[in-house]
Image 1 (cartoon, protein in one colour):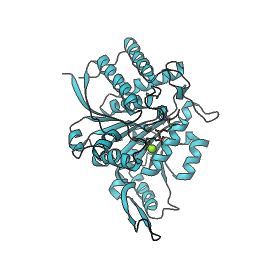
Image 2 (spheres, helix red, strand yellow):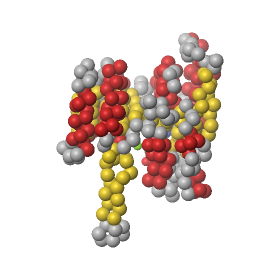
Image 3 (cartoon, helix red, strand yellow):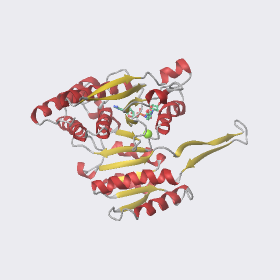
Amino acid sequence: MRKTYRIAVIPGDGIGPEVIREAVKVLNATAELDGGFAFAFTEYPWGCGYYRETGEMMPENALELLRGSDAILLGAVGAPGVPDHISLRGLLLRLRQGFDQYVNLRPVRLLRGAACPLRDVSPEEVDMTFVRENSEGEYSGQGAWLYPGTPREVVIQDGVFSRRGCERVMRYAYELARREKKTLTSVSKANALNYSMVFWDQVFAELGREYPDVETRSLLVDAAAMFMVKEPSRFQIVVTSNLFGDILTDLGAAIAGGMGLAAGANLNPERAFPSMFEPIHGSAPELAGRGVANPLAAIWSAAQMLDFLGHEAWGERIVRAIETLLAKGTALTPDQGGTARTAECGDALAALLRSRQGENPIKSSE
Ligand code: NAI
Ligand code: MG
C-alpha cells in the first residue's frame, strides 16, 4: 500500500508562497521517485492578507482544521502595515504553542560551496544542531502593561520556565547527543537572570546524571555568541531557551550560508499533534514578487519533514543535493552569488534528485 501523507500548507506572506512552491515541487519529486509514499497537500490562505480581510491571522478553528494533518509546511508571515507582534503571535506562536511543538530543531551546517563570512573556516568546523525550547520561556506572552500612556507607565514581560518544560527539551537534546555521539552544550545566562537561568542550569545538571556517556558544557549566551564566530567547532548539539535560540540561530544562519539556507522544524516529538516545518527566515517583503528569493531553506525544511516522517534517506539526499548545487555554483539565487530565479533553483534541485535516483535508488519500505 502506498502511504499518503496529509500535509497542510500555509504559504503565508511575502516570499513565503514563492519558496513553499519549490519545497512542494521537491517533495512531489521525492514521492514520485520513491514510489512508496505520496503527498496530499491542503493549502490554507492564512496570514496578513487574511488578517486585513477578517481581523485575524487565521480562523478561530484553525487548530481543529490542521489537527488531522501528518505535518504542516509553513512559508513565513509578516507584512508591512501589520504589526509584527500580531502576525507572529496570531499565527506562528499559536501553532507552536497550541500543538505543543516544544522542540525547535535548527541545523547550522556549513555545506561545501555555501558562502561563509568567517575566515579560514572549513565546512567540517560549522556543523551544529540547535535544540531550542519552543513552548514557553521568554516567549510565553505573559506580563502586564499598567497605566499605558501615562508617566506612571510600567510594562512587565514574564519568562516562564517550568520543570516539565525544561526537562523535556533537555531530554530531547541529551538523547540526540547520545544517539549521534556528540557533545551537548547548554546556553543560558545565570549570572544575570537569577531565577530562570539558575533553574535552567540546575535542571540541565540534574538530567546529565542520567546521561553519563554524554559530554556536556555550559556557556553564557554572550560567550556562546562570541565562540560561534571565533571557534564554531566547539559546538555540536546545543540546547537553549526560546529567546536565546532565536537569536543564536540567526547568527548560525549568518555563518552557514545566510538566511536563504537556514532551515527549521517545530516538533512535537510525541506526535500527539502535527509538527511544523518552516525556513527560519521571514517574509522578506523587499524581495517578494520578484522571483529572486532563495528556496533552499524551505527545501531543507521539507527535508527535515521527510526525516520526521521516517524517510531519513530522502532527507539526507536532499541536503546532499543542496550541497551539490552550491558546489557547482549553477542555478543559485542572487543571495548565493547566482542569477537564477527561485523556480529555476527548485527545478535544478529536483533534476539532481532524479539523476541520483537513476544511479543509486532509494526505496522506502512500504
Ligand atoms: P527576513 O528573514 O524576512 O529577512 C532578513 C534578511 O534576509 C533580508 O535581507 C532578506 O532579504 C534576507 N532573506 C531572507 N530570506 C531570504 C531568502 N529566502 N532568500 C534570499 N534572501 C533572504 O527578516 P526581517 O526582514 O527581519 O522580517 C521581515 C518580516 O518577516 C517581518 O514582518 C517579520 O516579522 C517577519 N518574520 C517572520 C518570520 C516567520 O514567519 N517565521 C521569522 C522572521 C521574521
Ligand atoms: Mg527568528
